[in-house]
Length: 66
Image (cartoon, rainbow, N blue to C red):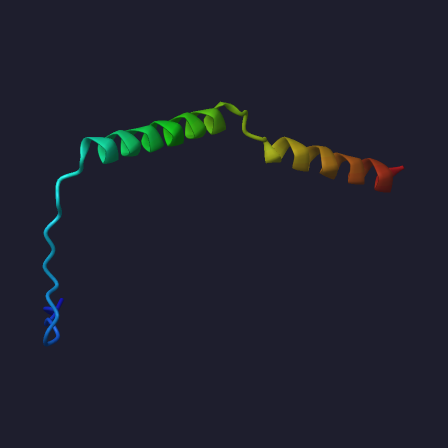
């Protein structure tokens, strides 16, 4: 892997500033909302496609065999 050279007059180094209490509270609220949303998503039972495919296949066999 090669090194990336900085173009002239461009500084790629960054200095992050600490978050304010309000920004930190907003971030925590957003993360909590996302966790709740994802938890609700996981509560739903997963569809069992194999059972649905077997039922469909059996119907086709019953129709063609009759």
